[in-house]
Amino acid sequence: MFAIASAVVFFRPLLTGVAKALLLVVKPRLSHEERAARATMRDRMLVQRAINSSNCPSHAAELRAMASRG
Image 1: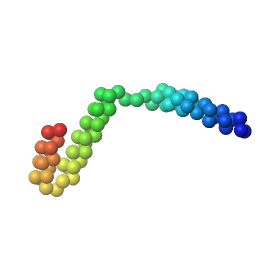
Image 2: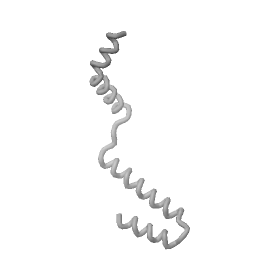
Image 3: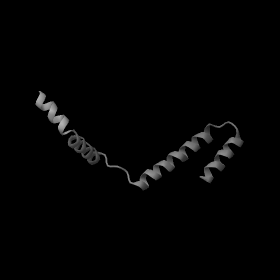
Image 4: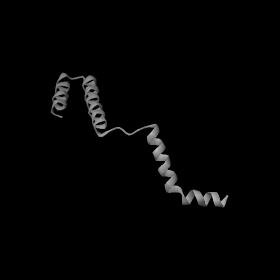
């Protein structure tokens, strides 16, 4: 039991590296462009939700103006 525990502690960096590599095989990381596109889409959807939920037309116009600047 002690030998197994000490082996796990000794090889912990190796085991975590292998686990991270397996995770990347299963679920690859998005490229920078894909992450930027998702962030842009998320921001646009957030503004659109704010426009849809606003009760006052002037607030919606202001939100549209802010969205067009960014």
